[in-house]
Image 1 (cartoon, rainbow, N blue to C red):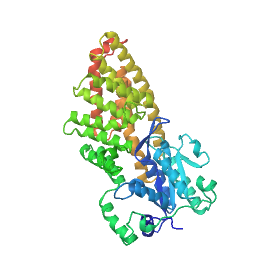
Image 2 (image 1 turned 90 degrees about the horizontal axis):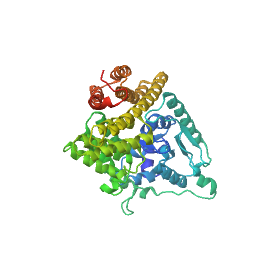
Image 3 (image 1 turned 135 degrees about the vertical axis):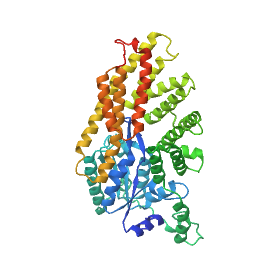
Image 4 (image 1 turned 90 degrees about the vertical axis):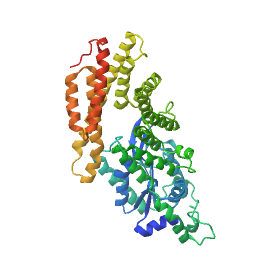
Length: 478
């Protein structure tokens, strides 16, 4: 039975290993059941790919495949022809669920289903074994990396040795025969063209000249990390076009929210041709994700950031009102300190504008802002405790693995401490502010991070110097 496409068979011959195709989302995805953001690239890079390769298999995800034309074509080939498929259903990703269904219809066995542990068990999958791992959102615990790599590797080796069907389609429809594929026509070769070898030669050149989606995303993220936002904008725009159904802008926008979110961020940070036009361009791009009705905290937070900056650029009070609405919505959706501290700050800003017409309205906003700051301090304390626990457990790993796991926590630790400092400053607790500020400076790894923290606190100080006397007790600078 011929179950291999030309592309997959070529890879197998080159590597001498069976091929495992990984079905999952990529980048940061929102788990709408819990409101958390999950870094699925970390799941792939730290948990899945090492385990698959340790099991003696060639590992590939859709964004790593070189191709010309529509990405769906090689994806369908992989679902039919790959020797193994690992399907990660984390965040109840609709594409992953769909692709798992296709795989179960095409192949009777060698499909492994995994998910992070908080996935609500889909009713229609309650007869399918789902191997779970624990994802912390932005990070994955070192102990969990070691544990799950072993679990997944053992599962793949067991599946490889078994002859039992793991597809419910073939389990319940006993006499069903799986389809096969003609390698000569696998990649769209015309019948008169001379066969599979010519297909490979014809299709390899344009694909080889184009970077994979994974490379585009990696370069885009690297550019953002280095404040090279114009370059990042180009990388993420190209990545969206790579996913386009038909090569048009509309086709691209229908695809992955993560790529749209990163393009939006890079667009307004690039400030090209000027800050206001860049913000309006970013706002237009974000409309594809319907931020007013979205339950994705990342989308809502981006909308808040754009509106906040438009107000600061003198574009009108309506942008301040919109920014407050978006940050409040993001905070109540996610219960996170990022949206909360911006929400609190903008309430102080509103008290300094014509939107608050009386001292009573100003007092209401000042009190509301400080209540949110008290909640922010609790949220940051929780996250800092979790980071400290993870750091304490990170012993005995390889240098590369330790560096990978520590890098995100280092940045999160700084911003958590900076946010704690700002919250305490707004509350007038200057002893706690001084402690948090010193710790934040010690945790920073770039001058701009400290400058950003101090600039924000300086703006807050100006606002409180004007209206802090309305609080009881009055806010007074130390």
